[in-house]
Image 1 (spheres, each protein chain N blue to C red):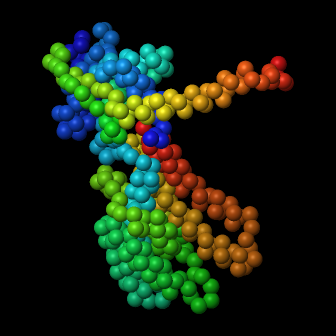
Image 2 (image 1 turned 120 degrees about the vertical axis):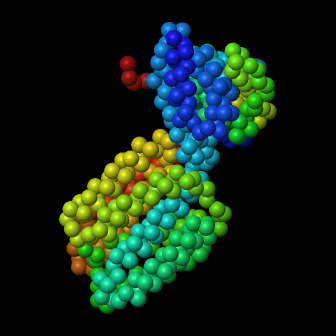
Image 3 (image 1 turned 180 degrees about the horizontal axis):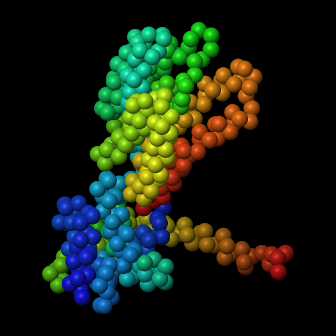
Length: 112
Length: 291
């Protein structure tokens, strides 16, 4: 797959790597994983989840009733896991362009 | 005060269509309430905005939308349809004005109706054929035997069919285009300037209102791009007509050896509105195409 993910979507998928989560747990986990950068509003979360489900990257796996309200759990599909890993690999490769340079070349001359 | 907050969130969820609320409303309300601080009485601004925009997108048919090319296809089809309708309206208003006779105008009206019907049914090759014939008829009307007769004011949609052909060609042979009812309804607003023009084409007041109405429509479409970028794209493509209209003016300036800085400035000014519309629509379409 060659899908490129936006940052909130990336962290939604990342939040689901270990186990299926319900909506609020995804918001919390994505916030933790992104060190507070991604603060998902509920409308944004469901827009993303519907889009990801439409692309076959996540699926609703079970439902329970808590305080009289439906609580759905979402899980990564194999395609979702593949897209997430491909995105992570692409970002790691992009990061190496900078981090390896620091160890392999002499310090830049000029400013300061 | 969670009861009060819950009522407010329920009210905000009404922005979503009823079928979606039935499916997801309770679940979303649960997430909203779980995420709210115990002493919160009013919904957070970012939650409010996300719910309103999400609901409007769902109603506009752009929720969970696919590729940028799908947005472009819908905009190309809608813009072509608008220009054909404008051209037919212009030909109808012009009956009796053209010295070369009403026959050409009547032919244009019939061909325009055929093109519009073909676009609505996604028969784009038929629509291209009809608009190419309209271009030929326009040639008959516009050429007075010696020089091109320039319409008195921009907004006389004489040169629209040529642009319609350009807009339709990318759609030929690629199947039907998905267009939502909301886009059709909103795009019909683009006929307001044509209505103003038809009322009195040679009145300064109406001419000024005509120009201003395009700016208002474009500004509204650019704002609406947050919900549905296809309208901004559509209006930007329709307003390419302003640039197409410069072609015969440049031709005339070249033939008189008068082409210069003022011609370039005129083209640049004519490009402002289409560039704003197309750029705004294209940027949002590209961004939304990413998952």
